[in-house]
Image (cartoon, rainbow, N blue to C red; front, side, top):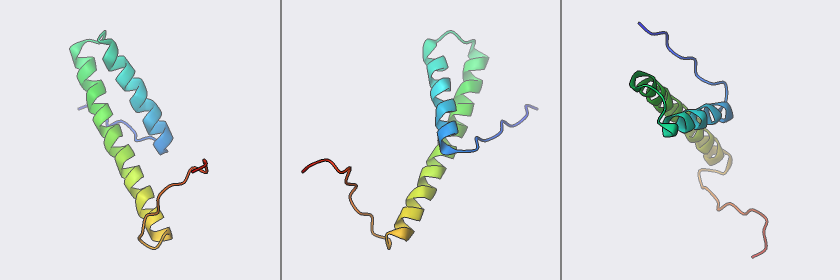
Length: 77
């Protein structure tokens, strides 16, 4: 049985690994089994990153009193 891959330590490192996998898959040069393994890892990373984003959104909701406010980038109106 294959050893489970370790989850990244942060959202950013997960996203970086996911982008690398996407680039490798888009090249179309990997054998089928390698492509399937990369795809599976990509799904795991996607779920990890989505979870981190959901956690961050929940923290913002708590900090903002459960009401999300529009983001203002500071640019002129």
